Amino acid sequence: MSIKLRSVTKVCKGKELVSKVNFDAKNGEFIVVKGNVEEAGMLFDILHGVEKASSGSIVISGYDITAIKRRECENLYRTVFGIVSQDFQNDLSVADNISLPGFFANISKIEQKRRTETMAKNLGIFEILKRKPKGLKKDIFVKVMIARACYMNPKIILASEPTKGLKDDDAKVLLSLLKNFAKKNQAIVIIASNDNAVEKFATRILTFAEGRLA
Image (cartoon, rainbow, N blue to C red; front, side):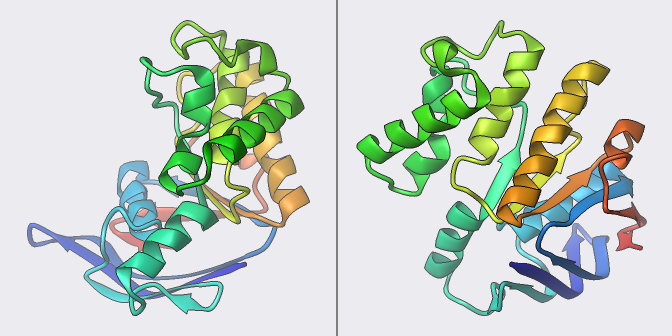
C-alpha cells in the first residue's frame, strides 16, 4: 500500500484550506501531523473521500482516485480506510457500532457477526458487546474505537486528535494498539495531533500550517 499526493489543493469560500500538498507514505509508517489540526482534518477528509480536492492528484496503491469512477472510489474508501473516532451511535450496542463499517460495505450479517466477535475476543471486550457505548470505562472505550477502526482490516488508518480527553495510560493503550496493528498488517497510520504522547510513537513527524504540509 502506498499514498502519493501531488499538488493537492482545496479551496473553500475563496480560501485555500489545503495548498499544493505533496505527500508520500508507505507500508508500516506511523505518521504524526502537528500544527493546525483542524485544517489537517480537511486533508484527511479529502484523502478518504468526504471532501473533493479542488485540484491535484491522489494516488492510492496505484489508483488515481481523482480519475476513477465514484463507485470504484467508494469501494476503495470502505475497504482500504479505517477511521479512529470517539463518535459512536449511543442508541446502538457496542457490537453494532463496531460492525458499522461492514454494514456500509454490504458484508453479510453472518460475516459481520463473525468479524465483530473475533475482533472483540482479540481485544478482550467480548463481554460488553451487548452494552451501549455510553458509560464505558475509558480503557474499554479505546478498545472499541480500535475494533471499529480496524474492522475492515484497513491498509490506511486516519485519526484526528484520537487521544483528546483520554488519560495518559488510556492514550498509550490506544496508540500501542494502533502501532501494533500497523506493524502486523503493514498498514499506514496518519494521526493529526499536537499531543506529545502521540509523537513518541511516530516514525515520521510532519507539520501542517497555513494549508501546507512540511
